[in-house]
Length: 370
Image (cartoon, rainbow, N blue to C red):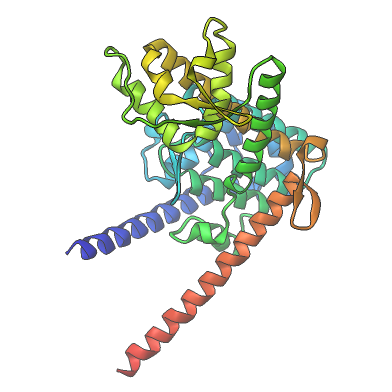
């Protein structure tokens, strides 16, 4: 029975997604009074490269956020009065981890910085493909909405890389359906680990230069932790989430926290292991106050904001020396590596889809024969 309920739910979600995809395409085809489009139709703006570039050049920050909110709202089947950024508590989940995106209050600012970078890339004559990757990557990285971020990013990417007419319309619609991410998935997770490493290495260096020992990792032996009696349980939950899912970047936040509190003797919370300093969270937890935990969480959010800014910068300024990495084929710029990884994932997904189509076709023949 549970299996039946699962498959029924999956089918219902797929049907709903197709219905919303149809609704979105119909809306984009017919709408002519979308304020940020200034009286033009979507078909007119996204019919050729010249119009797209002109649109980017004239788009204002508040209009950009309004458009993203409208597209996301339509894709989720929401009424117009509900078209808004609502990803205050959203998390990015995968099979192996759950990632906390930037603070909700920082998201509009990051979208504005994204648009500013897109305008600069446009003025430099960078390809619409590169600009589309910027837009799509940041929609996924910022996660401004409680749901539908992936579909929103794929639609925006498709509008800038295809022309909204003829066969291209059907190609755009395919990216909004159940297997849409198999068609195209601009996933910043493909380079997040490299950006995180760059940010962490710089933070390690700055912390050591200020006279401290680099923190190799966060560790504990006793769990659950012993916090003060008056600690807010919601704060403990948020901090526990970071400890379980993102200790690597939490260390950068701890650098900021300890740097801002010179009165704290960090040595009492460190365990020496060879040349490494290990931060013992079970020792530190006992002394944390509510305001300390809130500060650490806010410092972590700032780290996530800087990480997203690094993503913007490596796409806007791909030739910077700091973004040169070692790949399978030697030295390569991070953005070039990112594009190759996107293409590699796309080709792999297409092979999977071909195999599934072949399998379904064989099953249909078998059923017909019986």
